[in-house]
Each structure stands twice: as structure tokens, then as C-alpha cells.
Amino acid sequence: MPLFQLILVAVIQGITEFLPISSSGHLILLPGLTGLEDQGQVIDVAVHVGTLIAVVLFFWSDVRTGLIGLPRALAGRTDTPGSRLAMGLIVATIPTVIAGAILHFTGLSDALRSMTVIGWTMLGFGLVLYWADTYSPAIRTAPEWSLKHALIMGLWQALALIPGTSRSGITITGGRRLGYDRESAARLSMLMSIPTILASGTLLGLEVAIEANPAVIRDALIAAALACLSALAALTLMMRLLKSVSFTPYVVYRVILGVILLGIAYGT
Image (cartoon, rainbow, N blue to C red):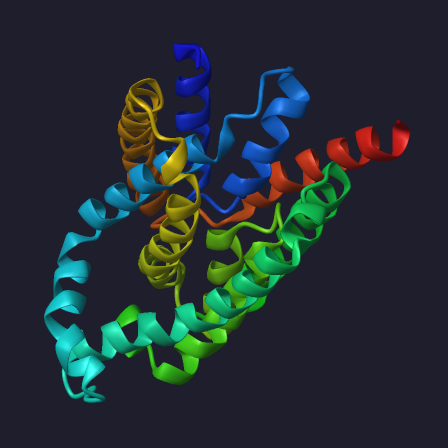
């Protein structure tokens, strides 16, 4: 694959995975809008691994706490901050795993990969994010995350399987509706991405492992590294901006892109 395309795919994935503007939607649109060949599942897996590394590094303190508490959580004990966080992430991931398996094995996931669907989800869920961010109270912080709230945010996250929805955008929406402040909603959303990316990456990785050859592995490593760097930059920028800026700029971008895509979809 040409280096330019690898860079383009990796940067798009790295930036859009954690900003509430939908990485899957942008990656699906890339070949159709640029005329480039589809990057294929091997590169998709690689850039997801890159963004996974980025979020683990950025939130290492939280990740370490969750890992320490994981054995207690697996034993059904949630009496420490780490075990509560680990159990919350497990609970939040279950709805997405179930819904993802249904879509994948029924073939419905491919049916949803259209410009029309992405246009409507960009527009619609962008407006839902604006509503939740503007009219929800900020009365909770991340340490107050309960298993009930983890399940609710997990159900919101399952909606992100529809291309264009944005996993981070929909989980931040859910977090804000539950009363978490912007930074806490974003933090919980990013932590929720870790088991979700692991689950989807493992599934796709097993399917594409037989395609591996030296050239593909080289491209995958390059894409993963670039996606990791761009994701770290996007995470740093967003978390800093949330101290003084709302999610409105992302909503504006989503609405504009959604309208453009719908215009193209219905105009052809």
C-alpha cells in the first residue's frame, strides 16, 4: 500500500477514534470520496491497535488501577476503586460485544456501511450530543461511576456499531445525560474504549491473520505507529480543551458533514 495512503488512514483513525466525530464513518467514506482502494481489514486492525496503545499510555494511571483490581472484580468483589473500575468496564462492554456479534454474523454490519446511514447518524447523533451536553447537569465525577451507570453507558456504546455514530461521541452523550462533567464523561468514554477495541481487534485479527505476509506486516506496523502518535495528539488536545470548551465545535463539524453527505447521497 502506498505510504501516503497508510499515513492518511492512520492519521484519520488516530484523530477520529477519540474525538466525538466517528472514526469508522470517516474510514468507510475515505475510499468513496478519494478514489483510493479500501485499506482492508489488516490495516483496520493495525490502526485500532495503535489507538489502543495510545489510550492505555494516556490513561495509564487509571489503567493500572483497573488492572490491579481486575482479579478482585473477576472474583465478584468490588470493594476497591480498582475492582469497581474493572467491573464497570466489563459490564459496559457486554452490550457492545453481544450487539457486535449479532451484526457481524448476520451480515447486517456490511449493510449499514453506506453514505446515507453515515450522513444521518453524523447529523442525528451530533444533535443528540449537543442536547445532552447543553442541558445535562454536571454533578458527578469519574470516581462515582457505578455498575448501573456502566451498564447504561454500555447500552449507549452499542449504538456506535452503526457507522457514523461515534463510539466516543455516544458514550460521552450517555455520560453527560447521567450527570458526569465533561472531563469525567470523556475519561470514562476513553477507558471504555480499551476492552471494546480489544474485543473487536481480536475478532478481526483472527479473521485476517491468514492474510499476513512480510509486506502486509510492514504496512500494519507503520499504520499502527502513526495511528498511536496521532491518537495521543488528539487525546491531549481534547482533554485540555474540555477544561474551557464544550463539545459544540465537534457538533458543528458533524452537522455540516452530515448535511454534505446526505446531499451527495440523495443527489445521486
